[in-house]
Length: 297
Image 1 (cartoon, rainbow, N blue to C red):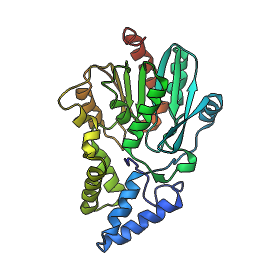
Image 2: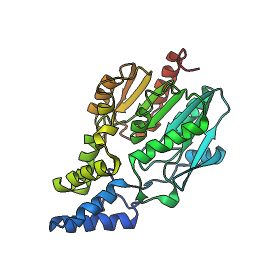
Image 3: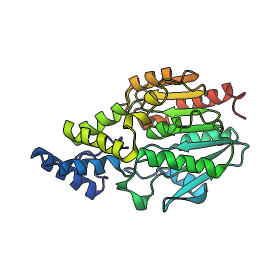
């Protein structure tokens, strides 16, 4: 479900023109109280796009990967893998991200003797089309089924971290890592409302539609609700940046309570996505893997 801080027409020239038009149309229709505005907002809420092209190092990783396809509900997704190690890690990008976005972590895991797997939850061909957090969770589950083995590390960024937490009780998963990860749905709804300039009526309509479509509130898909009565014991690496403007540091503090067997690291002034390039975070991953050797095969 939508986490974007880049949906307003003035915030990025890389936003697909159809989305820009939809945002403008929503604002006009909402200003005169037409309910069709809520339908436009709902589509925007579910719509993902890839705002930035991969960097040269990320493109090099793309070329060096072994690619396979997985089919889910008549949609094709690319799975990429690197290395032939005996330990296995699956990396999950954030909303509007891509498989090699965590390239620094891929390199570090390869040096640690891992086979590394990642996937594109949305392709260039599909960008700007509706998707959802529930689809994202199902895709990771399908990738894990295809692997048919233990996963020594699940590592996710932002909404990819939320997706990863859905497998915190899965016996196949030996360790968990989340970066810039929301603990609550409320931060997502607040960001969306602010960036779109959505009305309270629209946010209420979106929440209702999610319940109608999936039988659950959006809140039920986030760690604060999932782990309210039972907290996972899985070893967990929690990375956040104190300059994250999309997911505040308070979310990280909540995750520390929800994932008690944690190693926590907070960096400074890297932000929500740039934190993926912070060498100190790679060092924390290496330390975490060393400390978790008895759990990770």
